[in-house]
Length: 283
Image (cartoon, rainbow, N blue to C red; front, side, top):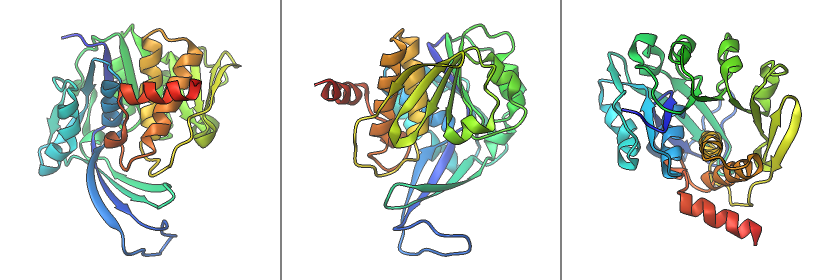
């Protein structure tokens, strides 16, 4: 079956503790509030893209454990296609997240099934657009891209070595400032989006700045899912043939709205919410 957009990436269950201040090295912070929410960069992007109206499938892996059902609930609820999902003999990916009252976070990940997701587990890509990230094995991404002729968006996070072939194949690379410094992107011939936190984002092509956008002002609750939602939104907008400036404005609004709620997938805005925020900015 063919879909408009495929996400190739990770699925996690996020175990979140919200505290007043993030602990320093060796420090224990008490009095936190706990929640378990579906996460993983791949699943986050898939849910965000689906909420924005894209016909979306995910190629990913979970374990044969009780965590899997919790990790998949939002993908199932939002109508993301799971035909290519693999269940492996490994635990479902887990992310341990600490979030402060100011919205800053610390994250430690136990990859489990994500790390075990191998090239032989990935079916042939049939969609027009692919979004991928680096929370699954690099060789798996390379295998999926072999022979693929569609549009490739790479959210180059987390920072990994040995990804030059993937970055060179990308039509769109999405990085934050730290990631931009970590990779040699000087020879990139596609689009390069650099997120700047509360300052917004820039879009570059062939070393030239072609668009810059500032997000709407919001009350920040949790920044955890903003980057994934931004990546989904920018890719969806470009796939819809929005202009580069309009696509960047759209993505910045999605990223900002995501920070107004706790969690990642649960924080992703709907298309109607994004359109309302953009209309308010233009007024």
